[in-house]
Length: 100
Image (cartoon, rainbow, N blue to C red; front, side):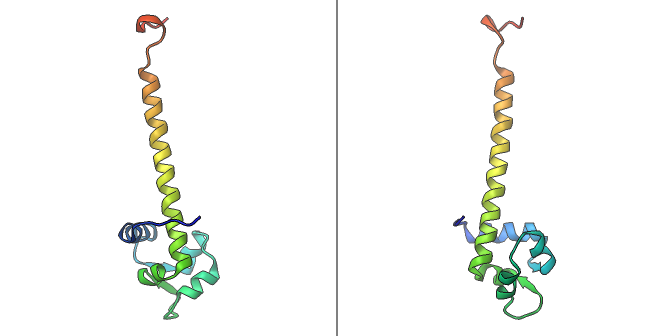
C-alpha cells in the first residue's frame, strides 16, 4: 500500500511508536520491518536508525506511512462503531417512543 502522509505527522507518529527517535533491530523486528530494509537504512552502521535515516529510506518511510494509515483507519472505525451504538440506543422503541 502506497501512502502519502505529511512529513511532520509521520515524524510524530514514528517518535510515538518507537518511544523516541531511534529504531533498533529489535523494534524493527516487532514492527515486521524487513531486516534488509533496516540494514539498507543504517547508513552510519551503528545498529540503529535515527529519524532521518527512517525518513530517507523509501521502504521504511512507506512502511511507517502504511502503519500510520492503518492505525488511523482502525481508530476511525472504532469511533464510528461507538457513535453508531450511541445512536441506536437513542432510537425509540415502538410508536410514540414508548417501550413495550
